[in-house]
Amino acid sequence: MKYMETTPFRIDEEIFLQQYLPVFEKRYSVKNIKHLIQFSVFLPFQIPFQDNSIISFSENDSILSFTLTNHINEKKYTGGSLVSSHEIEYYETRVEMSFFTATTYYYMTEKVLSEIFNTLLEGLNDLIIAYLIKKKDNDVYKISKEMLEPVCVFRKVNIEGNSFKHIENGLFTLHFNIKHKKELLDFNTQSEVAEYAVVVKDSINPFILSQELMLTAKRNFKQGFYKETIINTQTSIETFLRTTMSEFLKIEELTLEEIEKFHEDTNFISMVKREFSKRIGGSWDILNIRNDVGKWFKYCYKIRNKIIHSGYNPSFEEVNNALEAALSLRVFVYNRILKSNKYKEISIYL
Image (cartoon, rainbow, N blue to C red; front, side, top):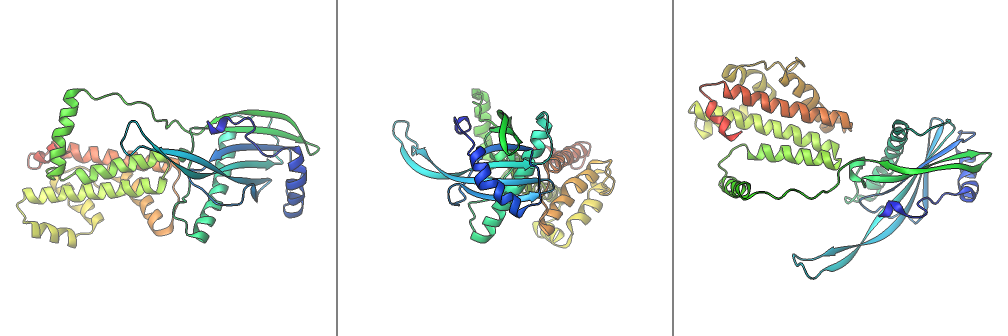
């Protein structure tokens, strides 16, 4: 595997003294560099810089430096055949992420490694976004740990008197998203899936789109697309609540034209606050974070708005909170519908 190369890092004592230290002393105020902590990663795309291009930034008492090289790989395409394949070359970029610091680290704990890796990843994303904007290359995007290989090589070098000493190497786990073999379905389950395909084909279940959007959000999260996760999560909830209201109105014997006009004339948040409680009861106060509706409004709806209106970049924790709040809201609505004599039949779709 790529991260098991014999010499995964380019920087040695000679390169440091000739190519890095003179530039650092000229450009940055960081003095007395004590440690170099490095990670080697492959991006899921190519940034076509010249091989061994070095880009550096200063940050507090540290310097973030990135060395980029191009690598050629091959992917096999079978066209559905089990006996033949066609190999096509593709390019990706390897990045040697380097953290030069005046801070003393006696022991590299998992927590310290994570903090340094996240700092380097943030700096790398600044470079990626700069390239994206300048070159308008839509094959490139901001990355998170989940988009990289599950593990990467790291090393810590003690730099004493500008010489490399006491080198520590190891593997650093980024995530656990490994494609394992799935358990085969039994024949009864396969039959259920096949039968449900007819439901999907004939659009019998009105909630299919909201479920699909929620599953897309979960896949986005697993792949590390944080903004997309929250946007799809909130879109799923809006679709779910709008569809639920439409089903209420059908039971109330409104025509399709009247239902359409209702949605056109009714603001989404106004509908949430006023229309559900009088039909299925429960607390629908969007400002009360002790209930499911309030948690969804704070952790999902408002974060989605920050993303849409100000380009906000949510954290892993914020995305996780948004998903949990949205799923809890769906359960809350389902339970309220189950307790309703008038609207209980809707539950068969949920």
